[in-house]
Structures are given as C-alpha cells and as structure tokens.
Length: 96
Image (cartoon, rainbow, N blue to C red; front, side):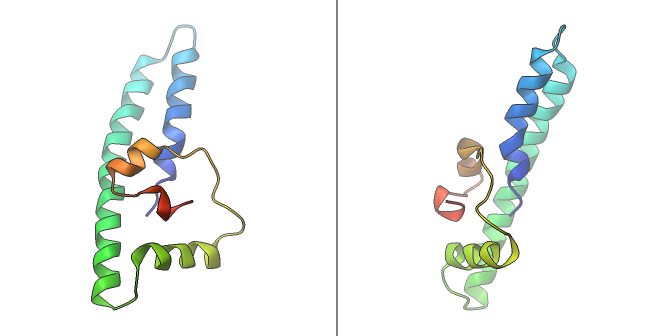
C-alpha cells in the first residue's frame, strides 16, 4: 500500500512552482502522477482487504499495522497527504 508518493508530491509541486520562472511543466506532470498513484493505492487497499478476508487474516487495518510494525523501524514519516490517501480508500486508521 505504497502511499508515500502521495505524501511527498505536494512538497515537490511547491518546489517546482517556487522556481524563477516556475517549472509548470514538471508541476503538471507531478500532478498527473498523483492522480495515477491515488488510483494505484486505491487498488492496493481494495486487494489487501480482499486477501485479508479470503485468507481469514482478520481486520485488514490491524494486519497492515502489524506488517508495518514488524518491517519498519519507528513511526511512519510525515507529512501525510490525508486527502489523496482518503480518496484512495486509506483512512488515517491505516497509518496513524
């Protein structure tokens, strides 16, 4: 459920637009990428839920949090693009 690209895109977009002149071409490409990535994350959430149900693994959010806890050190890094994550079906309960 790789959603980090959604989180950092707005920072990159802001950097592109701070240039003199602003790099609107790159900013537009990044915006399209966020739209695509939102769809990818949405499919991942859907499939993860489906597999948890089919394999009787339990609550998908708790299963995901268990994977994150066992595979990563410390808390997930902020910032989170809550709006894009929510559009993808990933509520804050998945990552907070």
